[in-house]
Amino acid sequence: MINIQSVAANLGLHSPWVSALLIGLVMVVALLGAWHVELWRWLSVALLGSVLITPHAYAYDAAILLLPIWLVLFRSGNPAPRIIAATLAVPLPFLSFLFGPPWTVIPTLVIFAFLCVLSWDNQRTRLGEAAASVA
Image (cartoon, rainbow, N blue to C red):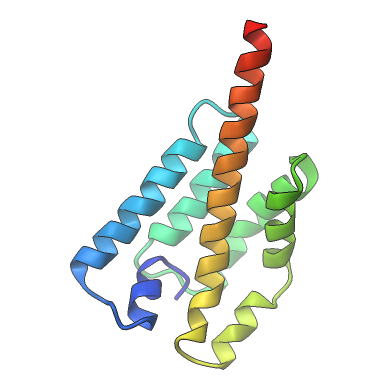
């Protein structure tokens, strides 16, 4: 699975408390990334967060991430989210499913890294626009 609970399960830390902590982490990152940003940024963060939080998200469910990948590749000016989006656009992270645990956690970590970097870029852009409007 490509949800955040699979990180704990693949590393042998599966418990309701660890799952709740990881889900809370994803929710905080997604909420910060979606706060007062453009529609395409908001939608991208919402889709990434929803795939990570959903209890039964499998590899084929990652197809819903094509829209955020394309939006970031074509709309973002920052290279960091574009690099991670390009990494998800090719099947290389998903080939780790062939090796079994703990390597099957790689696609989830790449998706979470994409969410974190995109949220950081969204807030950096929002704060830059706010500073420009004040000046």
